[in-house]
Length: 364
Image 1 (cartoon, rainbow, N blue to C red):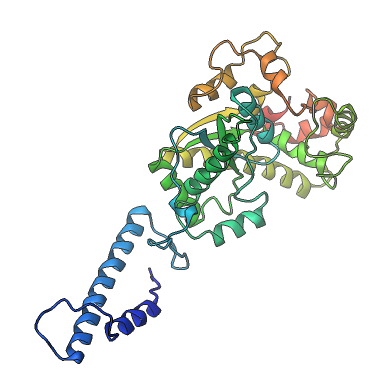
Image 2 (image 1 turned 90 degrees about the vertical axis):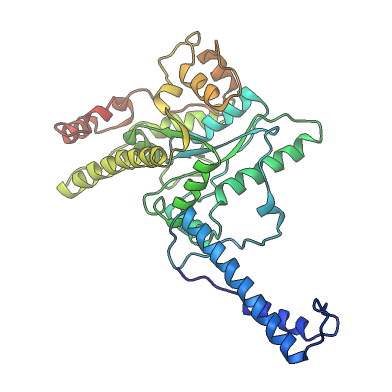
């Protein structure tokens, strides 16, 4: 591992040594040249010792590639000095692949426990932005520092006397191309050491696939925005219309193989992410979209999946919470039809392709 040492600092020390104002520690007068050499040698020993300490610290945190830069141990920025306040809002990281209901989940959790907060996709919303994030982050405790500064931001808002927040944090959208990045690995090691809590949300890969098709070419557009508010009936109608009659291209062997491979990779990636959290001993809870947003559950049914999350976080309603209570807190509406047969126009063809594979259970 190569550590870059700033030689300009040594030059500054040498200029101080020969300056008239540099303090003399020895009573016996020696030649000016001897003083200069002795102090420079002393500084170089101290500098070597500091470099050794930094090197040992990096080894303890985990091996990084030679291209990775390391957080300056003498940094003075407020960002890097931030420490989580145990009296502040609870902090957590939500790890979830795209189109898994992460925004609705976080918004509802925050509303049921306090005032609403937003969990932004800090690590990037797509593969390119995720790669850019991890290639540019330069300190191993990036996740905990970001959590701390988000907490500080919301605590500052609380001082105005208008809000009371219970849950703050950010989203980490995982991609297999960046989840193994050295800075992602280093970040998870620090998360484990500092007892950061993680919510891992997964969803049926076929439903994620269909949701992406529904929004393809229209995502973030006025016609089919990412989400619909519960009182926006026009938006909800457009979503429901767009969600029906989706055709999956399966006319060639190549298209069928690509479809199967996509679903299998998506499901396997979710397993890898869960195993990674287990490996590092990160405090986390694995929850499922299908249990959280169960269309079949009546309003009087207990919202067990939601209460498990609140118990894990130590906030919010942990007993007697019903699905009706949860639905009343929804800021965004669920617009996905219940049956794949309603959604997929070539349902029989899809069923035939998936029959005989380990993916047939994804159909409902």
